[in-house]
Image 1 (cartoon, rainbow, N blue to C red):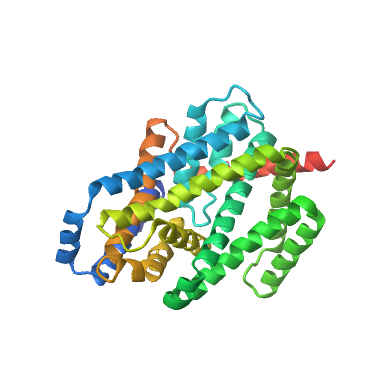
Image 2: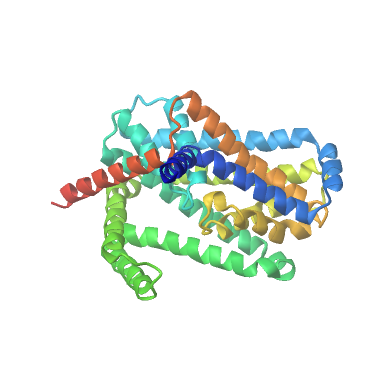
Length: 372
């Protein structure tokens, strides 16, 4: 009897591990549906959906494809510094790997090890692959923070008057992202000072018992600094190319933020202009970036209702939230899963974790060789 129960438990555990992504997706859909049902009457919801202008929702989906194309283009430009004959098709596949697995990972970084793995299969060394991905991440971090600061200045009056409930969410998000950008520049111009700051932060978190394993966390800092050392030289030596990629990155993120404005138009609303909605979306993006759930699930929905509730109105805000979330999150997950399955690249979380650990060890060895 006990053996049967143990076998059943073992089988159940294996199934949960194998289909964890599917289970997670169902849970997210269920939570979102629950939020909507508590915010709006189901009949009202259906009536508004029937009146939605589909052409604007399709325009929002088109924004996602343009966002991916620009992401792939930037990756291609960075990879061409290592392999001149690299193709756009591989850069797009690499984009989909990053998009899909980053949304599934609570830290939004689950895609990088798998991108590095795919690059290694194409003949890129660990150093070259790491340099490409770290440069891309640095551009992304600087871009979203820059846009959020500009957006906050532009919307400061509206934020002060109408969005008091979301104030602390926005402040914390901005502080964390600005700190990340400052750290990037410190690591570029004074790596030793950057290391001291990071070590000081870890020591403080260890004293507060927020972090525990000292050796593991110190090793993570060495790994992080090593990756930046590999990438930073080319960023600073090719300043004009870096600036051009930064401009493309700005356009890319503005197009992604414009999905919200497409949703706004789809509901037949016209009182608020595109610049205001895109600016508030830029603020929301960084405000929920620190939330440790896959795709900032829960925080993104709550943040949307807080920030955009006054703009959409009580009746439209929950519907707008689900339409926006469907395009900017669920559609990416579904399309990414289908694309990667067709290309035989989709793998379970355990396999992804194994690859990540293996590549992390490899990069550590590369860093040690560089320091010798």
